[in-house]
Image (tube, rainbow, N blue to C red; front, side, top):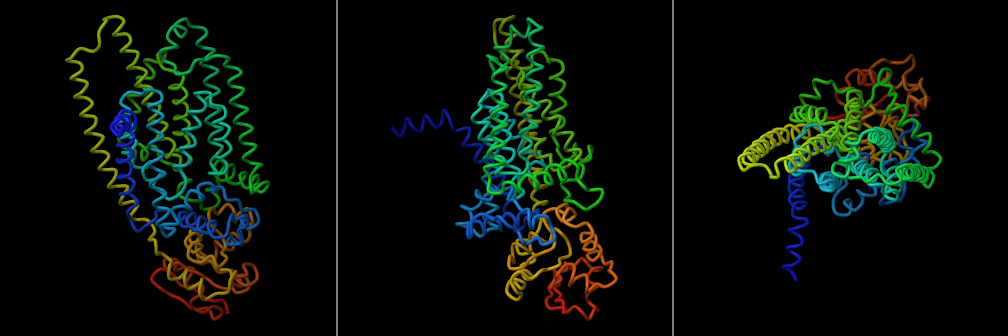
Amino acid sequence: MLNRVFKFFVRNYLDYFFIFLIAFFVFFYLQSTATLPDPDSFYHAKIADLIKKQGIITSFPWAQFSTLKDNYIDHHFLYHLYLIPFTLFFKPLIAIKMATIFLDIILVLFFYFFLTHFKIKWRFLWVLILLTINPFLFRISLAKAPALSIIFLLLGFYALVNYRRWLLFFLSFFYIWAYGGWPLLWLLSFIYFAIDIIYDKFKKQSLFWQTIKLIISPIHPLKKKKKRKDLFLALFFGTVAGLIINPYFPKNIYFYYQQVYQIAVINLQKIIGVGGEWYPYGLSSLIKDTGILFPILIIALFIFIISFKKQSRVSIILFFVALFFFLYTLKSRRSVEYFVPFSLLFASFSVDGFLKSILVKTQINLGLWLSPSLKRLLNVFIIALLLIIIWFGATDLKIVRKDMERGISLIYYQGAGNWLSQNTPKGSIVLHSDWDDFPILFYFSDNNYYINGLDQTFMYNFDKNLFWQWINITTGKSPDNLIKVIKNDFRASYIFIESDHLAMDNLFKNNNFFKLIYQDNEAKIYQVK
């Protein structure tokens, strides 16, 4: 019996097991630092811990001068639920690292499953290539939800091309509960529907397409119009249900207007400072940072063009999906986390469609497989490619690891945060020196309320005048009556200043209305008299 089970495992799941081990080594190595590269990770760890202790967070008084105060929604709700089991065994900041490791592994396994489902050749190599792309590894190693979002998109694409309407319904429902980037599934679906319709219309005009469609297409287009309609209805009603059957309805509607339209699409980066991930990714930097990816894409694109009529509809759809994410990455560097896996999927389908057509032609015309000499040459090529991938992978792993080490210490602001938690009245407002101070201070002291955090757009929309007053103070530009502004406009009792904000510190250190009550190498805290 055990022998049968072992043989079944080896025959069906051994490849998944090896990929699991490789991915575990990669992501454990990247996470084994005493830092977190993104301050938002402190926020996610804290929210998961608060949900575990007190249930769903429906109000957010911790950001007093932000639309989040009265219009908060947890747009990472399912992600935070996913983190909670890890907090049962580890402290929150270690828990979020462990959770990130396993979420990244799941993403890599889904990527491999997708290739396996469509019987893509050399799929193990494609997975190894995925694990060599520097910015992709860095982005999904951030202790936040990008890997979860990519998993939803991969499953969404699988549901679309295989006409799994119920799967698409539940994905569109739970994507909203999991991550604020859920409109990406609509974008993916729009590209799919548009190319699918054009593909069928073009195909009907060619006997060639009719002849080879069963060979190159994994989809058998029976009653296509009805199936497209069913898919669209599943997407639509899943989205509507996810928005309405929601602990944050109707507040979530306005929040998504800010998050999706104002922050992701329009973006106020020319007016206010936003997170570095929202700024453009220069083309030359993107090509340099992604290493082996662009040479592969150039080859795949050449193959795609010269063998266009032999490419499946999935290849064509993936080309446009990858193209969109490429263009959006040039606008917003954070989209590189989507561009890399979908561009590699396009490359794998493009190359695979070409190779399969060659094999079919060889069998038909010559009645034999590749000759032994060609097989040996192909094996040499694969081994050489594997060595190149391993070299790139080792190099990029070291680079990403160094980037991770340059992050924020797990105990950064711990001294100041603990002091605030233990020595200030509950709900007392702290005016802090930068918006990205908030997640770390919030993690160490939820006893206090703060000015602004998560994204500056939320404070800018709350009160533009207050926003610019706060910016002026944090940059050392004193208003006419600093003490009145601090007391009356911001109702702040404490001033938190990071050590490198010297201009801001100059406003307070020689001012008799403020008393220095805490200081370490990282920050100072003044009390308003």
